[in-house]
Length: 113
Length: 111
Image (cartoon, rainbow over all chains, first blue to last red; front, side, top):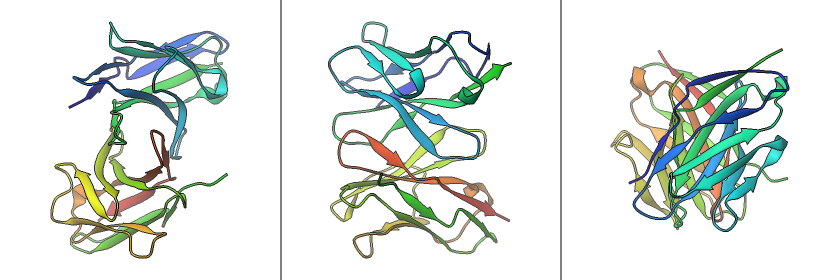
């Protein structure tokens, strides 16, 4: 079974500052890793995914994440945030058999003007 | 761009009533899922469906829940006798491979 830990439930950041949202996972088999964003009162939108290959993954809206197998982490970063990035961010894991996604508890990113 | 759609967007029901939540997955997708998100909590897996049968279900998905793909385009989640604790946002998702595409969700309120 897999599990995901998002260490920060809330992260306040000043506009145009960098941000890192942390995600650690646990799995006994190889995994796929995902970051989803949920804007207020909306569904889940995929930001980026790691399936294999390069450990640095670039996604939409200027976000990127780095897969670190030794530290079982998949932290999300953005060099300069905007007000529009205010949302809930979920890290998720699945296995390479098109199985269910297991989500973390989410991190609420709040941008301070 | 193709997308997953869900109806209704909001459903209010009385405890003990049956509800059916509807989803139209992306047309060429093969794998279908239901997840739920209780207010303020994380998204939880309910069930996955492939080749016209359930491929995996969580412990949440008890005998009160059922899924169906009645006509090759719709994918439904039925809750036979709703409880207060079933109040949540229910998301449908579909995939062809590694990436799951989510619908906008149905907010179910059980009174």
